[in-house]
Image 1 (cartoon, rainbow over the protein chains, first blue to last red):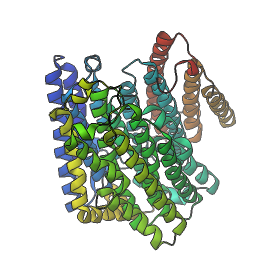
Image 2: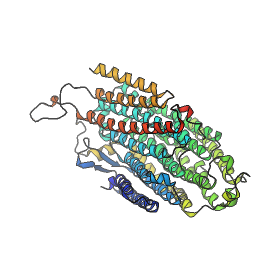
Image 3: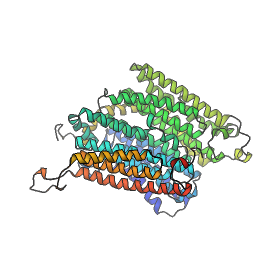
Image 4: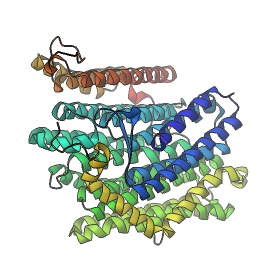
Length: 501
Length: 113
């Protein structure tokens, strides 16, 4: 039952939010309380998984290969915690004020729908169910993106909708072909029964279809153009939600499906993934350096750093995969924080164009220092969490003799430092441009808008301080991912003979 | 029958993708719906086509006498999802048309409006 709660609680909250009288204070409180409850259940799931190993829930008590299974191993549990943390921060940030038109159109319940979809995608143990959760979270995010009708937002929404639906069509195609071959949709059953029945040609085609579908969602190199074209238009809280969660769902699905279904580390798809990850890092950061808008710089950084999270899968070693999982956790926190920080500028100056920003350090040094931590954590400045995560990804490369790859990753880190230092210089440090009115400069940023940022920054610092224990947990998560037999046994049970079916 | 379905699925995929590459939103939406119909037919034919057999197991009849119900339920789910998505994208296109008077993606506006 515990495993269904991260899906059921947001659903319940969304329904209650629809039924309540539309008074914004009440709605915000209910949404916030719902997210806090999810955070509580997520924490207890992590504790239980740590103690008891992989948790399994057969929905409706249908036995494993026939019904839908919910599974939480360490990786899923960690991702669920991050979802609920970002859910809490995003719902808390609505106390600082939401556009009343958005609120009337169901802003709060849509956020809960997206959170439900993401939690479902992280927990499901059935590949078709994964597709359904993808659609749930996409529909929620589509509506969140297009609640407004400025031209830029409509254009961004259309790019986003078109590309993501294309990815869904690819995923559905791959699932259909997979079912035709294997005759089952349960991930554990697929991992067990499929290797005996695969044919090399279709195998390669399937792995490339999955790579394309998840690559579009994650934002890998040739497929990422929808992301910087759309993530800079919605309000900061929505940006934080989408940027923190949606690409990571793509990365999660990629790691989950490939570790279970394509366990041959010498398959050509991993070489393709390795090259694409490296190009993603370089292209994303070069793109970031060319931008002059705070949120567009962040979007390109988001793309660039996706490369770090997929490279662990391509290298296929417990150490590299563990490093990548740590990177995913760190990156979710930091990129969401930075999108919330961009909300400060939207509140104070009504823009995130770097040319119009500046002077925040002079007027409010404490706020600027709060923003400095995620900026430099993303860049990987020691001792912040980004540094720990980068060490976790790059050390296995050096150990595995991938010196060129390590050099690329280090150069990309340098570019990130450059990009973040420029953001700091342009948005906080330089004197405010003369055009901006004095009243805008002196409007203080109040507690409600700062509290969620402070919450996430505090967690980033906690991830820094407890980097040792956390990285040992991510290493264990990676070990679980690569040890397929434990996963299969946990879901299908001991009594199912290996030769069955 | 399987050959025919394979050809139909291929034609639907090809024309759907071609339409998605066009600049007009109406064509993009038609392309999307063709693409989702193509993948439905693909699921049906990939899982094996059976003729005139119900997807129900009847007591006493041998097991070859029924069709696999799973692909049918997958297609049903995919149709429902595709319908919802289609409705949403039509509304979105309608709003784009209302606010710009055009359905050409280039005339919606520059990236930084």
